[in-house]
Image (cartoon, rainbow, N blue to C red; front, side):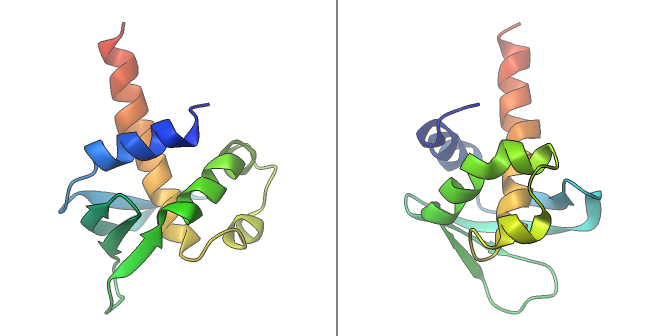
Length: 113
């Protein structure tokens, strides 16, 4: 598993305003709607989620807490409610980290083969 600083740096360079991220969770997979990245800042990522009027700002610290629990969550050793206690707006962080795994990590693996 990547160290969080690597993950955050990759998110900072890979996510661009306008990127659409599919809503996902480990229990049900992709859920049909998506969110749109608005801004990528060294301290946070902001986004426009579906059916929410206000831009959501996700601090770096929330990503870090969920990343360190990510393996337990994706292997169903940590319940959705438990991961939700780690950070506000965990629903969006989960979807972004899934995007990171499928788009960033898998693309780097393919390039290195």
